[in-house]
Image 1 (cartoon, rainbow, N blue to C red):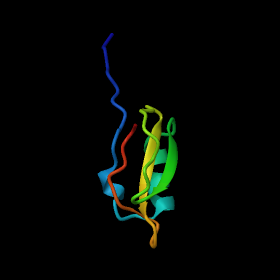
Image 2: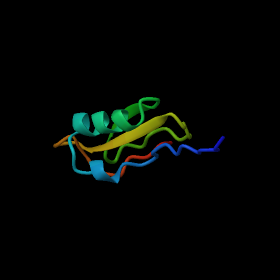
Image 3: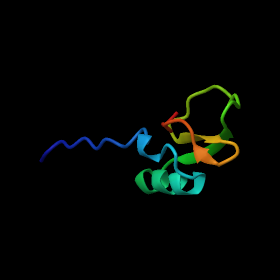
Length: 72
């Protein structure tokens, strides 16, 4: 029997510049176990770590991803 460690993806640099819906779909495809929060660039999200959350920080006028999303 082998001991295989499965590493789940924790960041998505490839979605920077994508629209919010497209980015959220890509993240959910990779990690269906997490939930996604949308925030405007410059908005101060409440602090705290959540291993089942990804925050998408969006450019307000375009609704495109401004910052690399990551779990937390």
